[in-house]
Image (cartoon, rainbow, N blue to C red; front, side):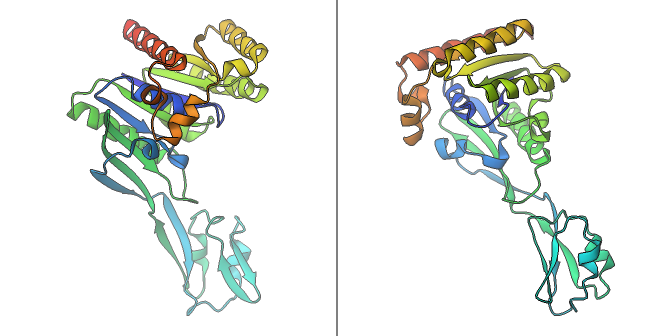
Length: 292
C-alpha cells in the first residue's frame, strides 16, 4: 500500500505528519519525494547503502582561451542567460536552460555543454525500516524525473524486503513533481491549514487528484488557529465528497520533537496530538484495505 502525503502549499505541516506516520509501525519504506527541499533524512539519519547520481540536464560553459567575445551567443540566447559584461562574455548558470544552441552557433567553438550531475538519490535503513530520498542540487531541473527514480527505488526496496507499506512525503504545489508523486498510489492524503490561501491551494490540489482519480482524503492541520476557516474547509470537502479524516490542533510539542530529531509519535507518544494522529493513520489503513 502506497500512501502519498502532499499539500497545496508549503508550511502546512505535511512533513511532520509524514514523519509521524512513518513511526507508527515498524518495517515500512519511507520515500521523501520532496526533492527540492528533502528534510526527513535530517530527522531520521538513515544509512547510505546506495547512492545514485542523477543527471538533470546540461549547462553551458565557456572556454575563455577560445572565446573572442564576439557576442553572437548573447544575441541568440532566448533565455537571457549570456551577458557581455565589460567586453567579456559570461554565462549565468541559473538562467541557462541547457538548450545547447549557444554551443552550436559559436563561431569559435568556445562553448561546451557539461552535465548537471550534482543531484543524488539515496537509499538506506532508518530506525523504522527502509528509507529512500532524493536531493536536487540548487539550480538543477526538477521535472519529476528524480521523483520517479525515488518512487521506483522505494517500490523495489519494499518488494525485496517483503514490506507492504510505503509512506511518501510529497512536494507541495500541483506541478510535475506532485504528479509524479501521486501517479498510481493507493491513497493521497492532502494536508491543509485553516487559512484562505490554504483553502485556495487545497481546491487546486483536489482538482489534480480528481483528474488522476486518486482516492483522496484531507487533514486540517493546526485547525484550532482559525476554527471558522476550518469549518469552511470541511464544508467544502463535504460538498465535493472528500473525507476530512482529521482535524489536528496546533501543538508546540511538534516543534520540540523536530528540534530533537524525532517525530511527535516518538517524542510524546501519550500526548493527545499523537493519539489523534494514530487514529487518523488507522482510518487510512482501514479505508485503504476496504477499497483494495
